[in-house]
Amino acid sequence: MPSSLIRRGTWAIGAAVIVIALVVAALPLIASTRIVRDRIAWEMSAWSGFRVAIQGSPRIEVWPKFRAILTDVTLSQWTDTEAPPVIEAERVEVDLSAMAALRGDVEFSTARLVRPTIRVQRTQAGFFLPAVPTGGRITRSIDTARGVVNANPAKPDLGKLPADTFGTVEFRDGRMVASIGGKDVEILSSLTGQANWAAMNSNATLSATGIWRGESVALDVASPKPLVLFAGGTAPLTLNFKAAPATFSFDGTASMSENAYFDGQAKFSAPSLRRVLEWSQAGIAPGAAIGSVSISSKVTATAGRVKFDNTAIALDNNPGMGALDLSLGDAQPVISGTLAFDTLDLRSFLSAFTPLAPTGGAGPGEIDTSFADRINLDLRLSAAHATAGPIQLADVAATAQVKDGLSVFDISDASAFGGNIQSSLRFDRKPEGMQVEIRLLASDIDGGAFGTAAGMTRLVPVGTGTVSVILKGPGRTWDSIFDNADGSVSATFGPGALSKLNLPAFLKHTEQGGFFALDDVSDGTLPIDGAEIKASISKGVARIDKAEANSAKYKIWLSGIASYAGRGLALSGGVIQADQAAAPANGKQGPNQSSFFVGGTWSTPFISPISRGVSGE
Image 1 (cartoon, rainbow, N blue to C red):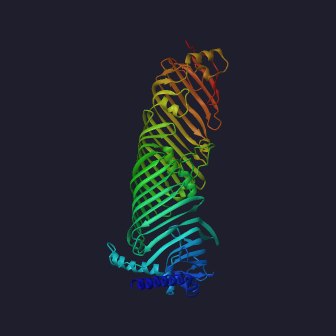
Image 2: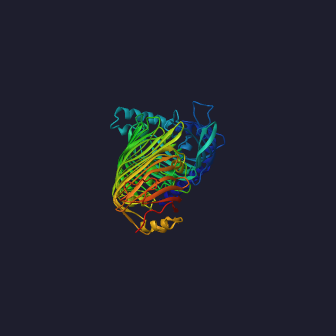
């Protein structure tokens, strides 16, 4: 008896194996006869919501997995038969259910698109997105979820969400194109990645890599409630974007309704803001060699407005904190806010936010104010310590404003050179051309420190004083501003000294006659009781109306012109004994006055005596 049971069991197992083998062997035949091309196309249409057309005959593979291989596949809009396909793929691999195939049905959980071309359109927000299907399971699920969300927007009943399966969509070596000027323009190439969404009421992820504007980019997006998000509800969302020029991440909640908003923590970093501007093709000329930028902020974004709270920003490793507000409702975006720094490089700041900083490279560089056509800016900033080139500043309060062709940077208050400074740099584009205005008021400063920072080391009053500079004029390049400027310069100094002037040696040379270099008598310092300078500037040429320095024994005066463009000097001057107060100056010979002429250039001035009336003894 046991042996007969064993024999019958063996026959049963053998028969089952034979049946399974026959079924496996018959699957390609069954598929090729019952799962015809139109059936697969219909199922893909019902799944995607697009009209699917398959030009080539399906090829069925059983091992290592049961799948259909389709060629020349297109997905098009049902409502516009004349429009080009939304998606074209040279090859589509669909993983099929063997049991469903035996029943004559098509069920698949994974679709692989090989070398697909995806056509996208620019939205009003400026993004490139593919056309939205007008039907299909995905669209119906979103419509159902929208009803669930509308019933209770604050806390929708997730148990009522559709549970239709979706699966996985993979894509390899694809590209995105957009119709621009009647021609297909490639937006993204080498597109590879996958979207995982097991069921409509489950979480979903998207990972993709590609090449955008010559740079490799990677994007990862995930949400535990994607269907709620697509239906206009609020759901968690994480996003990470990585590329060599910049990285960006967001972690928070979002809504894609008509009143869309984002609320969460955002981070942005770039090793070079100049490279980011060039790569993004924002149309803003990055004038200076801008360094690294990083921003971390609490972001709240609604339609037309983005608020950045508790913003941590670093420009060229200069950290700061503050709050920013971006408004998108006007003709140009508007950025406003306040930033506070412990230390700040003003050149880096200006380069990042305005077109005001000169280029750091060789050559004068043209001033580009196209920035003012694309954005409005109103920033208030402060810094405990700041640098502007070689100038060290403290307790800085400043503003940067850009609007309608006008660019202004003001330092309303700062400590420098032992005193206080105020300055303004203004560019105003007018019909007749770019107009530039530069103002500087330095009060109670150390004249020696100010002169060193300004590159002037000869005959600089060393002492406490006040300097005022006003320049106005047209300018296309930074050098042309000073070549064409009109304005005035004035300065007054109290007791101190004139640097690099050995007056006895100077007077001795004038007595001996013959011209000599000022460097020959620069090995001394002359104590003075005070000094005053007044000059008017016209077309880049300074006319010195008054330049006097008074010491206990002498009065020294200068008058004439100094050219900025050629750096040439044409000055007359004199040294008068202090007890000859009635003696006229300004070029007229007095009884005890040594007169002279100053020529040459700013860097190499020379002295030519005119008279020898004062002794250096």
